[in-house]
Length: 175
Image (spheres, rainbow, N blue to C red):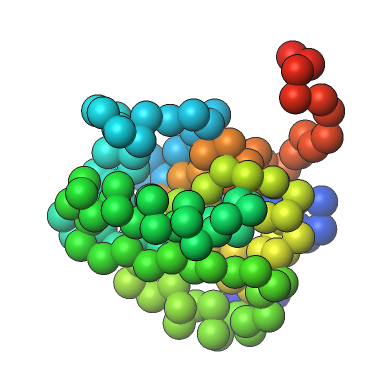
């Protein structure tokens, strides 16, 4: 059973920064796109276009996770329109506002056919509290590692991907 083979994720959401096992085949395309935030959503949209292309271009099936946002419906619809205009075949917004309670088989069934997952910006602590260490994101993580799924995140969505996550601080202070 897949669940039994996953490492402990209690300290992070996806642990995508950990080394892949040597027995896995090399990936043919990027599987993780980390966007610092403030990406161009209007003009060239280069990074968002690269995500759609990596997820399959005209055949891309993308799930948007706007859970970090204070306005997940609005943000989800913005990205849905962007990915549609960039040619993705199918786009779904997973508006998760309470801790995800899917079982592993339910999560695997939900993920079937998706080629990309995009996590929006907002509050990374909110995002991790809703989906971190859940069967849904264990499934996302495993599919990324297998090269079956492209994961992208901007701002909070990017911050939640690694083993360590910064939080807090003041808006005006620089690292």
